[in-house]
Structure formats: C-alpha cells, structure tokens
Image (cartoon, rainbow, N blue to C red; front, side):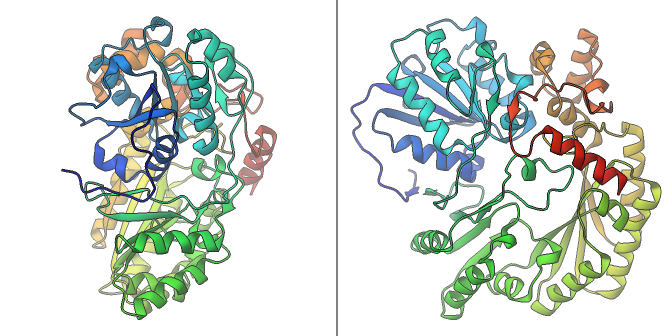
Length: 510
C-alpha cells in the first residue's frame, strides 16, 4: 500500500466523464522525483472536469481502462525517451503514426524540454505538442479538449492550433513559446518513499540562467531568468518540512536568486535551532561559492558538491561564455575545505568548438595543481561530449568525429588516473545519436521506428541508418551556415535567431 503524502486537497469523487492518462516514459521512481511532471499532474488533478491517472513504464495495471481514455499526454525530458513512448504504443496496440490513428483513438500529445527545443523528429507520432512552460498552456489545452469532446479530431486540433504555446503539425504555423511568470513557487506536490530521491521535497527557486553558455539548452529555452518571490519559497519550505526533513533547491542558477543567501540563512537558523534538515542543490557556480552558502549545505549533511567548469583552459571557457578564472576555482576550493566539505566533482565538456589538444592538457594541469594543493580532499571529474542543441549559439556547429573524441576521452582518463583522480566520460557513440535527434527533422520518422524495432541499442541505430541509406552525419557532425533554414525555426522564443547568430559570432571571435 502506498504511503504517498499529497500536499494539496485532491478533489475526490469527481463527476466528470473525461479521462486522461499522463504518461512518464520511465519508471515510477523517476516520475515521482520529476518536479515538472508531478506539478503538472497536480494542476490536472485539481481540475474538476478531468479524471487523470499517472502512468509509468513499470506500471502493471491502470485504474482507467484504455478504452475509456479521452486524452494521453507524455512528459519528455530526454532525447531517447521516444523508445519508451513506442514501447507504450506497442503495449496498448496504438499505431505509431498519428495519421494512422482514427477517431477511435484518443488525442495524444507531448511536452517537455526536448519537445520545446525541437519537436520535428517526433512530429508524426503525436497529434499536438505543448511548447514552453506547461503550467498554464497545458491546462488550457486539456480544457479545450474537454469542452470540444464531441467534435472530430480534426476540428479539435484546429481549435488547439489557435492556442498560444500549442503546436499542431497538421496546421503548421509560427508557434510562440509559452513563458510563465513565476509568481508562485513550484514544489513537490506528492512526497513519496518510492521516489528516486526518497521522501525529498524539491523547491524551484528560479528558472533559467543569465550566464548563457553557448552550448546550454537549459539556459536558452528558459530565458529570461525568473526568480520565485522570497516569501513564496519560505512558505513552500515550511510546508515541506512538516512532512519530511529532506529539502532540495532547484534551478539552473540557484545562487543568482537575489535572496539566496537569505534563504540559506533561514534554513541554517532552523538547523542551529535543533531541526534535523538534509539540504541539497543540483550544482553551484564557482563564482557564487560563498562561505555562508556552503556552510549551510555542510551543516545540512552535504559532503560533496558538483562544480561546473565546462573546460580546462580559460581561453575555451571564455569562448563558451563561461567567464571563469583559475583563481576563482581555487578560491572556491579554499571555501569548500574551510567549510568542511569532503570533496568536489568537477563537470566539464569535451569536443567544444575550436577545442585543441592544449585545452585538454589544461584540464590535466588544473587537476594536478588541485591534487597537489588539497591533499586528502576528494576530487573527481565527469565529462560529457559536446552535443549541438537547438536555440543555442552553438546550434550551427557539428560534433567532432567519433574517433577523435574517443582518443581525447581515453587520453584524459588515463592522465587523470595517473594523478589518482577518478573520472567518467559519457559515450561519444551515444552522444552522436543524441546530436542526431537534437538537430533532427521529420525525415527521421521511419528511422526512429526501425531503431525501436531493432532493439534500441547502438547497433540498431547503425543498422537502421544503413537500411534507409541515411546520412546521419548531416545532423550530428556537419557545420551549418548561419543563413540555413533550421527545422525548429518556426518556434519563436526570446532571444530570437538573429541574436543567436550575433552571439555565436561574438563568442567565436573572442
């Protein structure tokens, strides 16, 4: 029996006859720890006119029968989530292509960061998409479906296509990304011991990042940076602490909140007053590594923190708009040691545009200096390889070839191992296919279906591409000209394409 704690007043015994499945393409534990998914579920669940059920990969049976479902929504956060979507379709005998689903099938739509960035590889699998922040537009779209329940699919889609933040492929037009003003605090609405982050109460402090690293999708699709009012954050923290002692503060740039030190002071005062609070943050920026903040985290049980430095050389950090000096890195480490942290994990990226062997060597040099100065302090590195993302200044740059990235990766791991430093690097092979999806278009429709049919592993991608005679390098490794029309250009968001071109040129020219 579930011991889930709902932090809102659920409407019990609804009288509406409109049924909806809200699908998370992953296990229940991941769904329960996904703040965006759970908050949107709360919003739907709070609507009188709709009966909604959460559906996961590992759910054995549903309360609402498929034959009674009027609408299905998917929350898609990662590029490879489409494989779970197809698995779901297969389980319920749903045709993969939206045009093959007649009036007997419910409308099926999707939203999330992958969709907001570039929905084109998936446009033939869904009836419509939510583009941008989902809090308001998602509820509006659902209510339109309820209101027009008895109309034909095409009539419903025509109405939806006229809604801001909704993209209906069959009625193509320019779509303006939905942007939510953060007047309220988004927080975990259901505390569960089944969550991946067991019994953890997550609070969104801010949304977006003003630093705008050239490769960063999370920064650019969430501009402008928005801060939740201090009073709303404190209210949420107090609410969560009634039910659990585990807190997490969420945001791409949490320390940029104008009241972040004040928030830390509030939590720290509770700890000093005898409350047992465990506090976590996703990561901290080096240039905001202040003693008061770090001490609060340490006193709340944090032993290790993650710092994103992205590149080893100051030249390359400047090129990606990560204006961070080596001096600042060591000042942050001094604070970490003084506050009693046990270790730091540095996050970086390989294969960034213009990267040279000298830039890789600078990572090793930096690691050597850190290891030499901070003996007994646990230092590790994690790297991913560059994946060009839509709506960023680096969307025009292709990836380095696979062999070159493998060589860099092996060299880096070997040299760091010599220093006694543990390191991990994401698979350049998998990152290649992530880039294919990231800059993909509707020509990938048959390819994605074949990848699924062939098992979804690396070999499946190679086999499907060969079968269809597809040149995947076009998506992953080619450099695009600035005047090229891109698949996702129909999505309007701030800043626009002209700004991205100027910013891309500015960063390259230094």
